[in-house]
Image (cartoon, rainbow, N blue to C red; front, side, top):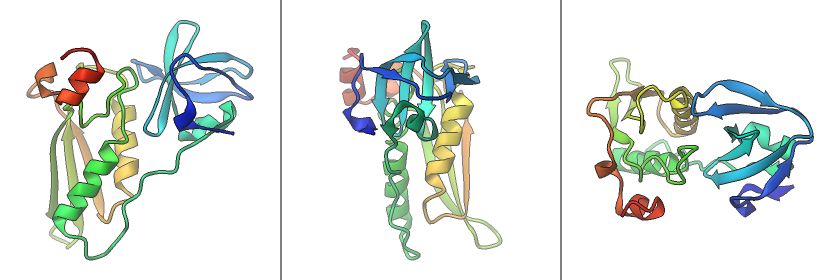
Length: 188
């Protein structure tokens, strides 16, 4: 099996069996047929974006074995019961930096999609993590897929409840992108 981080744009992959995927940008869950030829458009974080019959598809870790790709090990923070709020927020940031827009080769933090990260204590004593985020375009069908990806990654942290909420107020624009993101996308 080939590690995900050794793939580059333009590489071709052959499916050994049916591959679960999400169509980009609609987010529709689908299956790519066995023996299909897929062209890699990006292999970043813990997902893979491929082109098949003129359409883009995002393939999560669980679908990579059908392509003879070794899924990456999830980035997990050391689960220490006495982590400070600042340490938990640093771990949240590290996890968010493994999430990529399937069409743009930049992580969601650098894209400026994260508006807020907040830790609070619930009345019953549990720790609550809330992430408020947006998408580059309202109505993007990949929103629920990206939100679920984030939730799964953040649940590995020492918090009891994880909420990821989408907002479009204020609307995202390129002014929210970091210099690194602007450079990576050729917008600088």
